[in-house]
Length: 224
Image (tube, rainbow, N blue to C red; front, side, top):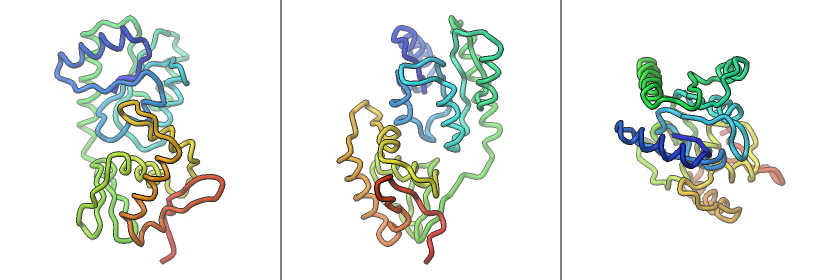
Protein backbone atom coordinates (compact mmCIF):
# COMPACT_ATOMS: atom_id res chain seq x y z
CA UNK A 1 0.00 0.00 0.00
CA UNK A 2 1.34 3.41 -1.04
CA UNK A 3 0.12 6.39 1.00
CA UNK A 4 1.33 9.52 -0.79
CA UNK A 5 -0.47 12.77 -1.67
CA UNK A 6 2.02 14.00 -4.28
CA UNK A 7 0.21 12.83 -7.42
CA UNK A 8 3.24 12.80 -9.73
CA UNK A 9 5.44 11.00 -7.23
CA UNK A 10 2.69 8.48 -6.40
CA UNK A 11 2.14 7.70 -10.09
CA UNK A 12 5.86 7.26 -10.74
CA UNK A 13 6.32 5.06 -7.66
CA UNK A 14 3.26 2.96 -8.49
CA UNK A 15 4.56 2.41 -12.03
CA UNK A 16 8.00 1.39 -10.73
CA UNK A 17 6.48 -1.05 -8.23
CA UNK A 18 4.19 -2.61 -10.82
CA UNK A 19 7.16 -2.99 -13.17
CA UNK A 20 8.81 -5.10 -10.46
CA UNK A 21 5.72 -7.31 -10.20
CA UNK A 22 4.13 -5.79 -7.11
CA UNK A 23 0.39 -5.25 -6.80
CA UNK A 24 -0.19 -1.71 -5.56
CA UNK A 25 -3.12 -0.01 -3.82
CA UNK A 26 -2.85 3.75 -3.37
CA UNK A 27 -4.28 6.35 -1.03
CA UNK A 28 -3.67 10.10 -1.07
CA UNK A 29 -4.94 10.68 2.47
CA UNK A 30 -5.29 8.82 5.76
CA UNK A 31 -9.05 8.36 5.50
CA UNK A 32 -8.66 6.33 2.31
CA UNK A 33 -5.68 4.46 3.75
CA UNK A 34 -7.75 3.32 6.73
CA UNK A 35 -10.35 1.89 4.38
CA UNK A 36 -7.76 -0.03 2.38
CA UNK A 37 -5.66 -1.39 5.24
CA UNK A 38 -6.19 -5.08 5.94
CA UNK A 39 -4.14 -8.26 6.33
CA UNK A 40 -3.71 -8.63 2.56
CA UNK A 41 -1.31 -5.67 2.61
CA UNK A 42 2.28 -6.99 2.71
CA UNK A 43 4.03 -3.64 3.19
CA UNK A 44 3.13 0.03 3.66
CA UNK A 45 5.00 2.91 2.02
CA UNK A 46 3.96 5.89 4.10
CA UNK A 47 4.49 9.60 3.48
CA UNK A 48 5.01 11.69 6.61
CA UNK A 49 2.96 14.75 5.71
CA UNK A 50 -0.59 14.13 4.44
CA UNK A 51 -3.64 16.39 3.96
CA UNK A 52 -5.57 14.98 6.92
CA UNK A 53 -2.80 14.05 9.33
CA UNK A 54 0.71 12.68 9.51
CA UNK A 55 2.40 9.35 8.94
CA UNK A 56 3.46 9.06 12.57
CA UNK A 57 -0.11 8.82 13.84
CA UNK A 58 -1.10 6.35 11.11
CA UNK A 59 1.93 4.17 11.84
CA UNK A 60 0.82 4.05 15.47
CA UNK A 61 -2.73 3.13 14.36
CA UNK A 62 -1.30 0.29 12.26
CA UNK A 63 0.62 -1.16 15.20
CA UNK A 64 -2.18 -0.55 17.73
CA UNK A 65 -4.52 -2.40 15.35
CA UNK A 66 -2.32 -5.51 15.54
CA UNK A 67 -0.95 -5.25 11.99
CA UNK A 68 2.62 -6.52 11.68
CA UNK A 69 3.49 -5.82 8.05
CA UNK A 70 6.60 -3.68 7.44
CA UNK A 71 6.14 0.10 7.33
CA UNK A 72 8.63 2.23 5.38
CA UNK A 73 8.45 6.00 5.77
CA UNK A 74 8.91 8.18 2.71
CA UNK A 75 10.28 11.41 4.08
CA UNK A 76 11.75 14.61 2.70
CA UNK A 77 13.08 15.28 6.19
CA UNK A 78 16.49 13.75 6.88
CA UNK A 79 16.54 15.13 10.42
CA UNK A 80 17.63 12.40 12.82
CA UNK A 81 14.98 13.23 15.43
CA UNK A 82 12.16 12.68 12.95
CA UNK A 83 13.62 9.40 11.78
CA UNK A 84 14.06 8.15 15.33
CA UNK A 85 10.50 9.16 16.21
CA UNK A 86 9.14 7.11 13.30
CA UNK A 87 11.16 4.04 14.22
CA UNK A 88 10.06 4.29 17.86
CA UNK A 89 6.42 4.28 16.74
CA UNK A 90 6.91 0.95 14.96
CA UNK A 91 8.23 1.82 11.49
CA UNK A 92 10.75 -0.65 10.08
CA UNK A 93 12.71 1.59 7.73
CA UNK A 94 12.76 4.95 5.94
CA UNK A 95 13.75 6.31 2.55
CA UNK A 96 14.59 9.99 2.09
CA UNK A 97 13.08 11.87 -0.86
CA UNK A 98 14.04 12.24 -3.61
CA UNK A 99 14.80 8.53 -3.55
CA UNK A 100 16.40 6.36 -6.18
CA UNK A 101 14.11 3.62 -7.49
CA UNK A 102 16.71 0.88 -7.09
CA UNK A 103 17.29 1.83 -3.46
CA UNK A 104 13.55 1.85 -2.75
CA UNK A 105 13.08 -1.57 -4.36
CA UNK A 106 16.01 -2.94 -2.39
CA UNK A 107 14.56 -1.67 0.91
CA UNK A 108 11.13 -3.10 0.07
CA UNK A 109 12.50 -6.52 -0.83
CA UNK A 110 14.70 -6.65 2.29
CA UNK A 111 11.82 -5.75 4.62
CA UNK A 112 9.43 -8.24 3.02
CA UNK A 113 12.04 -11.02 3.32
CA UNK A 114 12.57 -10.15 6.99
CA UNK A 115 8.84 -10.15 7.61
CA UNK A 116 8.35 -13.50 5.88
CA UNK A 117 11.15 -15.07 7.92
CA UNK A 118 9.33 -14.02 11.07
CA UNK A 119 5.92 -15.00 9.77
CA UNK A 120 6.00 -18.47 11.24
CA UNK A 121 3.84 -17.10 14.04
CA UNK A 122 0.45 -18.70 14.48
CA UNK A 123 -2.42 -16.84 12.84
CA UNK A 124 -4.82 -15.12 15.18
CA UNK A 125 -8.24 -16.69 15.57
CA UNK A 126 -10.98 -14.93 17.52
CA UNK A 127 -13.62 -17.28 18.91
CA UNK A 128 -16.97 -16.10 20.22
CA UNK A 129 -20.07 -18.20 20.71
CA UNK A 130 -20.37 -20.59 17.77
CA UNK A 131 -18.19 -18.40 15.56
CA UNK A 132 -14.52 -18.15 14.66
CA UNK A 133 -13.13 -15.05 12.97
CA UNK A 134 -9.79 -15.15 11.11
CA UNK A 135 -8.94 -11.50 10.35
CA UNK A 136 -5.78 -12.31 8.38
CA UNK A 137 -7.81 -14.51 6.02
CA UNK A 138 -10.96 -12.36 6.10
CA UNK A 139 -13.01 -15.45 6.99
CA UNK A 140 -15.91 -15.94 9.38
CA UNK A 141 -16.89 -19.47 10.37
CA UNK A 142 -19.91 -20.77 12.24
CA UNK A 143 -19.37 -24.29 13.55
CA UNK A 144 -16.55 -24.55 10.97
CA UNK A 145 -18.82 -23.58 8.06
CA UNK A 146 -18.04 -20.40 6.11
CA UNK A 147 -20.41 -17.48 6.70
CA UNK A 148 -20.71 -15.48 3.49
CA UNK A 149 -20.07 -11.78 4.15
CA UNK A 150 -19.28 -8.80 1.97
CA UNK A 151 -15.88 -7.11 2.22
CA UNK A 152 -17.46 -4.15 4.01
CA UNK A 153 -19.16 -6.42 6.56
CA UNK A 154 -15.83 -8.17 7.14
CA UNK A 155 -14.02 -4.86 7.64
CA UNK A 156 -16.68 -3.78 10.11
CA UNK A 157 -16.41 -7.04 12.06
CA UNK A 158 -12.64 -6.76 12.05
CA UNK A 159 -12.71 -3.25 13.51
CA UNK A 160 -15.08 -4.37 16.27
CA UNK A 161 -13.38 -7.68 17.12
CA UNK A 162 -9.80 -6.38 17.06
CA UNK A 163 -10.80 -3.50 19.35
CA UNK A 164 -12.55 -5.83 21.78
CA UNK A 165 -14.20 -4.13 24.78
CA UNK A 166 -13.35 -0.70 23.33
CA UNK A 167 -16.29 1.55 22.40
CA UNK A 168 -15.96 2.75 18.80
CA UNK A 169 -18.03 5.76 17.83
CA UNK A 170 -20.03 5.78 14.62
CA UNK A 171 -17.74 8.50 13.25
CA UNK A 172 -14.68 6.36 13.95
CA UNK A 173 -16.22 3.40 12.15
CA UNK A 174 -17.24 5.59 9.21
CA UNK A 175 -13.67 6.84 8.85
CA UNK A 176 -12.16 3.36 9.02
CA UNK A 177 -14.70 1.82 6.65
CA UNK A 178 -14.15 4.40 3.92
CA UNK A 179 -14.72 2.43 0.71
CA UNK A 180 -11.61 1.07 -1.03
CA UNK A 181 -12.75 2.65 -4.30
CA UNK A 182 -13.22 6.02 -2.61
CA UNK A 183 -17.02 5.86 -2.46
CA UNK A 184 -18.55 7.65 0.52
CA UNK A 185 -20.07 5.48 3.25
CA UNK A 186 -22.73 7.43 5.12
CA UNK A 187 -24.43 6.92 8.46
CA UNK A 188 -27.37 5.02 6.96
CA UNK A 189 -25.02 2.63 5.12
CA UNK A 190 -23.23 1.86 8.36
CA UNK A 191 -26.57 0.99 9.96
CA UNK A 192 -27.31 -1.39 7.07
CA UNK A 193 -23.91 -3.09 7.45
CA UNK A 194 -24.46 -3.53 11.18
CA UNK A 195 -27.93 -5.01 10.71
CA UNK A 196 -26.74 -7.44 8.04
CA UNK A 197 -23.76 -8.49 10.14
CA UNK A 198 -25.93 -9.06 13.19
CA UNK A 199 -28.41 -11.07 11.13
CA UNK A 200 -25.60 -13.32 9.92
CA UNK A 201 -24.25 -13.80 13.45
CA UNK A 202 -27.65 -14.93 14.72
CA UNK A 203 -27.62 -15.44 18.50
CA UNK A 204 -23.99 -14.37 18.63
CA UNK A 205 -25.02 -10.89 17.49
CA UNK A 206 -25.25 -10.07 21.20
CA UNK A 207 -21.45 -9.85 21.22
CA UNK A 208 -21.85 -6.54 19.35
CA UNK A 209 -23.19 -4.20 21.98
CA UNK A 210 -24.81 -0.85 21.23
CA UNK A 211 -23.65 1.89 23.60
CA UNK A 212 -26.44 4.44 23.34
CA UNK A 213 -25.37 7.87 22.23
CA UNK A 214 -21.78 6.75 21.73
CA UNK A 215 -21.30 3.81 19.36
CA UNK A 216 -20.58 0.10 19.51
CA UNK A 217 -18.30 -2.32 21.22
CA UNK A 218 -17.46 -5.99 20.79
CA UNK A 219 -17.76 -7.74 24.17
CA UNK A 220 -14.98 -10.31 24.35
CA UNK A 221 -16.34 -12.26 27.32
CA UNK A 222 -20.11 -12.11 27.17
CA UNK A 223 -21.92 -13.99 29.92
CA UNK A 224 -23.64 -17.02 28.47
